[in-house]
Image (cartoon, rainbow, N blue to C red; front, side):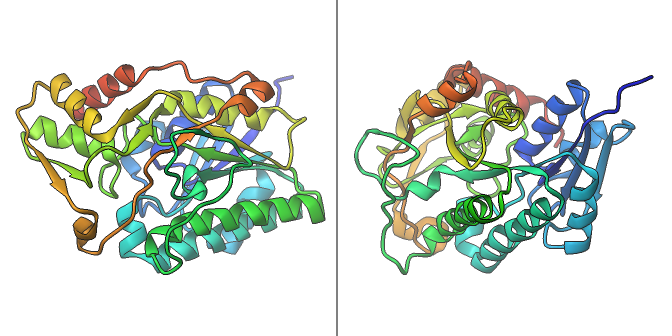
Length: 328
């Protein structure tokens, strides 16, 4: 008698991270349902999966209660990745950001609780806020934000509420959940449309356009390859002894944005100029930026033995290769 496939639901599964996660789960024998309204995801990310009998794409919103109800009921686990993402979208469409992130997560949590399904909530390093010290951020580090009126923090606030809501469901109603704070996941298929730095730098360098740097470029980031990130998501979901916990997932290889631009130029053999844009002119609205964002990953390492395996050079090579061969 053939064994019954385990079933996973990925909200936002046609997005950059979700589509790679879908591939991983399918390769490991899961039957996968993807729920995505294709507002920031893309049908191209999952086009190669659509003919598989063990892959199902549902084009609808995570805000659709009846659809979420049906999908959560039929699946064994839920990866909740659906969110409004990217600084540009956050600043220009704050209503969409807040409603999608807060109300969408509320709908998913309600139905996971209703049917007793384990759920992984994808959160973000943005919740730590505006840290100036060059120190690793642990899961219990303090939250430091800028002015309370700055729209820049709408995304961070919305994801913090997602975390609090998931933990409240866990504490009060016994929901089986795990929360993952992602630190700058990058790789093939990531769009620069909403402000993601590496795809924007690579696209500009390959086209010979000016590479836009916000501020003076001395702010630093740590970039994690999407193939490493999805391994962490899968491992944390599968470790059933974990529940009601938060984990950082990211690389600790740090680089300044200015050095990143130079490295991209070299890799692309580009003559692009660097153009520095003051923060008050970014997107024509003005934003604040975090100076440093370094994850402490001891907790996830201790829980599931996860550490990133790919270097920044490997990440950039993969992104450049993707852009050179991607259909126009």
